[in-house]
Image 1 (tube, rainbow, N blue to C red):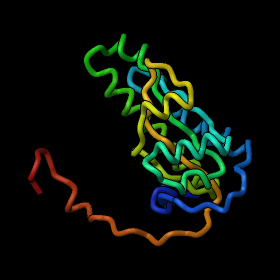
Image 2: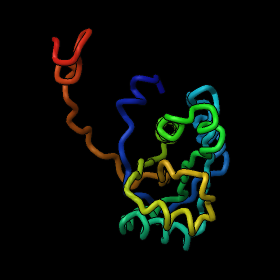
Image 3: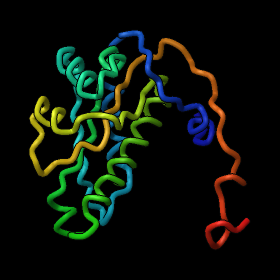
Length: 175
């Protein structure tokens, strides 16, 4: 699919068929994630692939009871190991790690769509509880949770603001 078509086609999918996601697709999706930019090329992201139904159930519960998450074929938990990036960027390292994880997350979403799968970026979760059930160490930040699966349906195109409502030239507020 052409890049700009892919960007416009991607949607947040919250309804899945329950069919498993092929391992070969997961490898392609994670490979796309690792090609995202990172501050100073630190590449501090880590990915946890969750296929266990009990863990997916707990992730859904700890994501403020978003039950639809457990129906996904797989859940990828995007994390950032803060040690190296905070050593290199003591004042902004955690912020950069979150940005880097967000870039990897966007690549995951686009790769899933390109493979004909649905995915959704979940940012509403209890990080401490997620860390406990997935055995994530203290020096690691959970950036996002991305359920991925075969779509039950194709959602409608949402309204998007026009560029004139979002863009300024040279300084804030200028047209």
